[in-house]
Structure formats: C-alpha cells, structure tokens
Image (cartoon, rainbow, N blue to C red):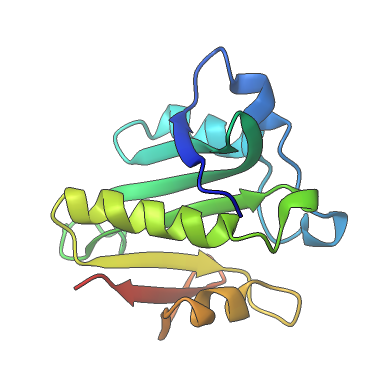
Length: 156
C-alpha cells in the first residue's frame, strides 16, 4: 500500500469512476453496487457520506458512511449512531490495505463530529467480511439490522 491514499467527494467529474468500482463476482451478493449507494445517498442527503477511495489518482474503492441516524428507526432518537454503510473495494485491489484505510477514514470523520463509536453491518456467513471487521477490533453487538450482523468499534 502506498501513502497516497485519500478520499474524494463524489462529483460529476469522478462519478463514472465511482460507479465503475466492482467487487469480485463471488462478493456481489454481499454489498450493493456503488450506483445503488449513490441513489440512496441522494434520497438520504442528511445522513449519507459517500466517498471515492483513491490511491494517487487511481480509483480503488468506494465507501459510504452514515452519520447521526436513528439506528432503531423508531422516531424516538434514542439510539443515534454513525458508521460504515457500504464498503466496495475493487476486485483487483483487495488485500492491499484499502479497506482498513476506509474504516480508519470513517472513524476519523466520526471523531471529528464528536462521536466515540463506529457501527458497521455486514452479511453473515463464511464468505462475508466478518473476519475483516473483527480483525480491525469490531465487536459483535448481538443485534441484526435488515438481516445483517451489527458490529461496533469503540473510538475512545
């Protein structure tokens, strides 16, 4: 991994590069395509934080964070959380530290906004990303969200 990693806001200039990010075919059932994430960001502009992951000028992935949402979705606002909503690392770019960079970048943004924990959800199962998240220090909460496993990383 090089030291030229950065995040870039999605703009008309890099939109095609962003939607061109594709995970491996055996992972397509685990994460929505970038174009769906961008559509969700459009309808949830107050909560979505989509970013293109670049290594130098080369697009290597996409992330979308959620910021300050009512995780319980019950209208009470009693369970406000921020975290990683989507993570798509391009098929040929996996295993190079880009996923770790993405999680660290979302953690930094949450800290910048005063948060102290990062929530992530992922598809359960042998082929899913659970080992990746647990290896970064996430702990299982025992919750499910839309059928996905919920994990949290303390940012203290």
